[in-house]
Length: 332
Image (cartoon, rainbow, N blue to C red):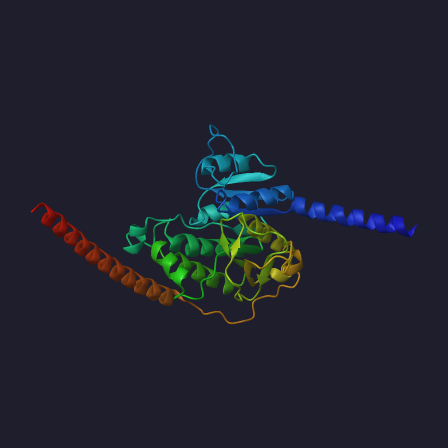
């Protein structure tokens, strides 16, 4: 009867979807990071095979863990034991590693980011831009490597890249991150532009501030396409991992720049699915480069910081002299 036909149709639809997921393979960078580990686990839970890039060898002597405070060696061992996950040795800043990573993959989720440098090292630019851990290498060179290998690949068709807001070079937090993070914001934006002008399918995700888990979760997810602005809010790593994975199911999310923030409870969505359905490809003209503006903002910020420190030191010395004089006066 009609009911049986409908039931069979939905069963076949479900089996087709499951088969499609099982046949899919996704490459992931930033594997042991707070975001990357959740991306890998989520993909594995969806029966999607994963090639996970790992810079260091697996250490079987540690206790596997994916907890927030777990060491990278623990996270790596935990992820390596998940169904469908293959660990690939290498570094995203190395082209040969990227070629090995995307072998037989359908997409890349680039969740990597630079290691936080020592503030003095960044302020005085002691680390060469060519160094593999510099923000230029991680946020720019690595992205170019991925574009190159995707263009050569017969199977890999999409790059999902997690960046951040970076179109306001003089914004306070942008200047601060550039000053103390080897121009991380600047090179993130330049990496975005590599993707936009590459001709490959990309989805750029600009999340809010990740790290807190004590935030409302009831209908709070919000998206803005075309790189449009949303008020900066806290978002969870779990939310952005969900967005990274789910956007692969939406062809309309190709060549799009998505800003992902949270709104007041009840004003957003419980998941990104209904939001992704309405995403459109980038249509506005993004600035071709903002590198010099970012560098100028960081230089001006450094001058202000140096002036502040000079005044602080001067005042501190004057206060110490006054206290010393007062104390010596008492004893004389």
